[in-house]
Image 1 (cartoon, rainbow, N blue to C red):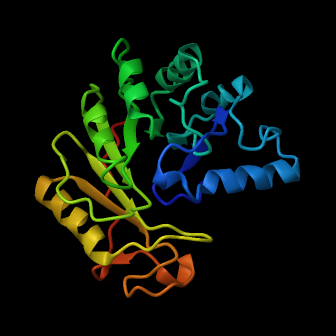
Image 2 (cartoon, rainbow, N blue to C red):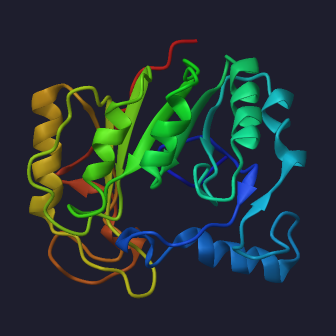
Amino acid sequence: MSKIEWTEQTWNPVTGCTKVSPGCKHCYAETMARRLQAMGAPGYENGFQLSLLPERLNQPLQRRKPTMYFVNSMSDLFQDGVPDAFIDQVMDVIRATPQHTYQILTKRSASMRDYFATRPVPDNAWLGVSVEDRQYGKPRIADLLAIKAKTRFLSIEPLLEDLGKLHLRGIHWVIVGGESGAGARPMREVWAINIRNQCLNAGVDFFFKQWGAWGADGQHRTKKANGRLLDGRVWDMIPAVAI
């Protein structure tokens, strides 16, 4: 099982990545990759350098139980260096396992848009973009909406500033979370509540993942101490999965 609150399993046929925006500054995957490299874990021999792992492609085929998979939690499927032919293989596995649901998240929204401009999106693939701020994050929403996908989502984590008005028509799910770990940047409660209110008004499922290292009161604590309460309750809405 995954420790990520909004999924069940992770599937990493690609590992490693490069930083492209402020949301990448304290990348948890980079820290984890280096730790796994030190432990000698297979697939992380190159640390956080891009690595294609075709031997992992068939992993979901070996699981019959319907499962929610986060694709490439340790990478970005649409980064430079991942050939379209390899992405095609990932999509082939997704189509071959309709009992599973696959969450694909990227910061390279233009690359994802261009890839799917000539290919259909599998019905069991949820496509998402990271939206950490106004300058880099919000423009990705337009790229996502240009793709004909059955389910689209936004991962607003870490939320680094007030995002103002969001274009949510055509978006089915929004995840919000603060940053954790060393050097974490604070998230203000009013920013998260603004997004929550927009989601409720638009009929979009809203999931509050975590406060991270900073609480609603502006105090720095541990992730566990700050918890998942926003405005007095846990928000764990998620789109229904049709099996």
